[in-house]
Length: 438
Image (cartoon, rainbow, N blue to C red; front, side):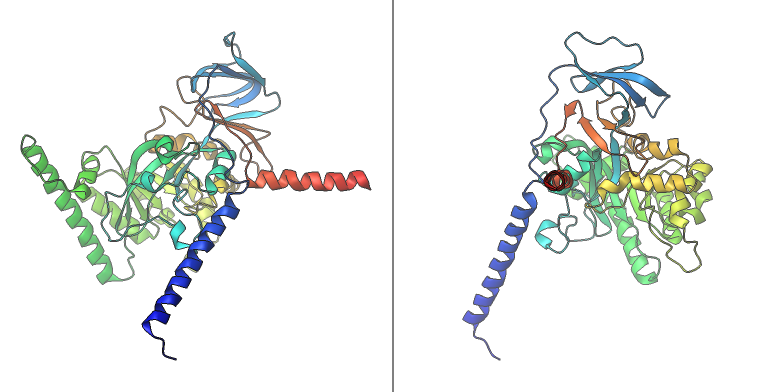
């Protein structure tokens, strides 16, 4: 059938309008009772949480302990501490107090609905994009953010994807009005996707592009230092890489295959840069290489299965324990899926079931990622001087039945209502009324 140009244009316009209205409808439905939370106000008076089991993470567990915080900062921790006269006292007897969790690699705020391209902003065109900043694309109104914060995740390392150099990851808090409010730390790491080793030609071409990018960045940096008092044409790509070359920002390399890991380590040594390995499903095959070079590791989904027939079924499940036994610095992330960000503690729990000590598992989602990204002076444990980013739970955080009852981020008491809780309470009330009428 032949269509004239006018008919074709009409069809295109209708399809476009239909897609726009679909997106609007999707967000209008998704926003009901999901993003209804208003960001918490700044802490106005001292707060004392008393009589709880305080799991400091960095030290001993304090039974019937007290934690005092003021202006968003922890001011006292212990059994016998001074409580300000004007403090708001909350008795958490029978509850557990933990530092809030840190997700060390996610697309939270960058990906909403995978099948609707307008809601996905995780990559840019081109292969070399060191100037891309994840925080600018972060959607503060994402429906996934309320779930993350009400499940105890206070900070997420949000990272871009795609290409060879994807851009800069950023540490984002899960409470705030806009992305500017929610930036916890800019430039948490520059993300590189190591090429597959299966296609030799594509691999060599990609690695050569990567080498060329670093060569140009070094030339740019050298020229800029040599001509500080003169006009120098600014290139945002190489400007973004200067902190990497100076060793101030680490490079996060996504590499799962053991051949990728070995190749990435060799490249990093030649470039003389600090790297963090991420993904690394087959890291257990090259543990000596990682250990000898003192490279920290981000363990992605602990639940993933083997990638080859000869690999054991529990390869990913036992990896954290193997890294711990080898003395390698590591942290656990629950994979990059925005929707599954809330499953972070479940991955740590699975690692415990396969040999990782419980204390280490808890550190792998709190203190260790804080150290890895240079924010351990503010987060990761319950200590005086650190942010009052805390979780009140009704049991052990690594037990699947445990419920997070309250979250504080930098002293701000959060609204805990999200879609999950809303519908739980709604239908709990429904069946309660049904029982009353029977």
